[in-house]
Image 1 (cartoon, rainbow, N blue to C red):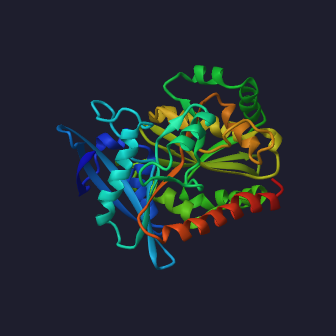
Image 2 (image 1 turned 120 degrees about the vertical axis):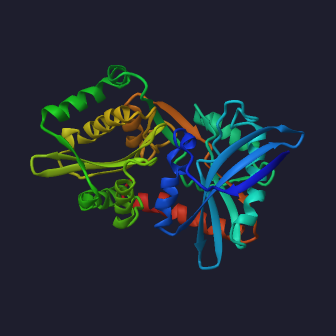
Image 3 (image 1 turned 180 degrees about the vertical axis):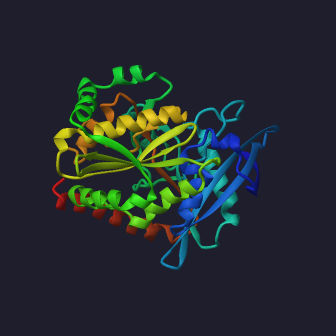
Amino acid sequence: MYNFEIEFSKEDRADWYKNEPYLQSKFWSEFKSLHGWKPYRFDVKFSLKTDNQKENNFTVSVLVRKFAKIFHLAYIPMGITLQKENSIIQDYKSDEYLTLLDEFSKKIKKFLPKNTICIRFDSPIDFEAPNERDEFVKNKFPFGSIQKNKVDIQPPDTTVLDLTKTEEEILANMKSKWRYNINLATKKGVVIEKATSKEIDIFYDLYLETAKRDGIAIHSKKYYQDLLELSEKNEGKNSPLVSLYIAKHENDVLASIITLFMPYQAVYVYGASCNIKRNLMPAYLLQWTAIKDAKNFGSQIYDFYGMPPTDDENHPMHGLYRFKTGFGGKNIHRVGSLDVPISWIYTPYKIAENLRSFWYKTVKKKLAGR
């Protein structure tokens, strides 16, 4: 269906930086290269075989990692994203877009290590309701060579605030209890400080406590430190601003978050809290501070990044759903991870991956009492 011209990207394109999701940024590729991933970045031109006069283009980051010293997995997080103005493809839910993913996977195979077992996408296909997403997945996949993977690398469900509104409008759209909690934290003397990578121990100690309490898996301290240090190193360039916020009350550290701001998208990436003074509502004031900073930075949306799909009281992370949706954003339900297998090794790898996911997402949470 498509003709492709693919070449390694020679420079960072400012027009893509202004509109791309953070997972597709050159910054994120550089960061992941510090932790076992080899980044590839391609500039791609494509046209319809039946009409090669109308040519479109996109830039895409591909991350490749070696497993078991034997095979590689190629991963395209939140891609392929398109500049939709005058584009051949206007709808990410269309067969034309899925065909683009399928055919592009086959074309980049020659650029990747020979023992790459699959191309994995966390695509920008999203829906307003989870049942619409689930119906789409049920009816569409498999599509060509594309399979829906059971394990989603990026959280498929989130809620997003519109930062083009005024602060007064954003506050008005929150649940009244959320406005009350923000004011309560302020009145009770909770203070929000912006820290640097040198204070990563404060965040990580809280994160270890959070992981034990909630039964979640986390990275090593160096992972989060590298993220902050790389942002500090790239300050002033076409690069995201990564910030560490810490909530304190008197001599106690209560909570902390890490955010990432870009021209289009601001993201609440990581969060941690302790078990004391939770009645002071530090998490609410942390988020409101970050939301205001993201708006002042110029980001158009604030993505809370990850929550259960519905308001199900029986879900082990139901509290997370209530907390994030209470800020008044729009819920988004993405399709999740899509795989294009290119080796027989993919099948046993997928079985092992599913077992690992079951351990972390089900067994460990039950052991933690979630």
